[in-house]
Length: 301
Image (cartoon, rainbow, N blue to C red; front, side, top):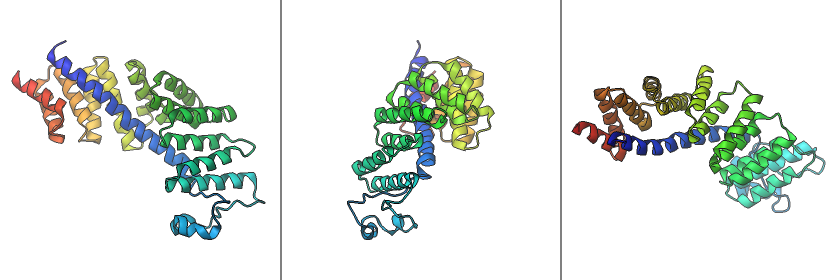
């Protein structure tokens, strides 16, 4: 392998991580805010504090919404469960994580068990970096609610965080079977396939996601960036250049897209254009060593 290939391989290793991590971060953040934000906003143990202590302990903003955080003995099981989830959220907001987990566990102990409650604690574990525990809760939720695609998808995200991309692909596949029109699932499976060095499978999933006309610019950016990288892995430089170009239109400051398009242009003999991409990447981040190395290498040829 020549110096060009060696420089790019180093860039590619770093870039795969850069591709995967923001995508996880983006997919996970939207997933958690959607699933958790609707259900939970407060928490407190009945035996720990009285209702009059709530404003002092947690502030009026958390309790002046008309919801009683004290468990009502006459409440229905669903109302008790919702209250426990709200209490867990307040404990998490004030970083009392052990108490938050305790409230979530109490909610899980209510009968009949509900898959979404396992999901709520699973998301809490994800936020705490306890990915193996999160997998356990998502799988337990699936046993109760096997047709809930979000549980399968979330288990895939947790497995990806653990580095078990093969298991993640399996969970994403189940989510896709249950919700074939959800583009986020295809993006996530494509990301896992990239990690598994399966560019053809990744390219196919990016195709499907893009065909669904992704509404969010962030999703569109990662879809075109990922498909471009899958094309690059298969030496389809024309396709890679086109997709990286779209990614750059969405995010002009993307060093990854500029570096990868520069490499694709270089491999296809477009040296002047490649040099321009490396220069743009170096301008975005003058401290990026790989951008500087590629720029110096081309200039010295």
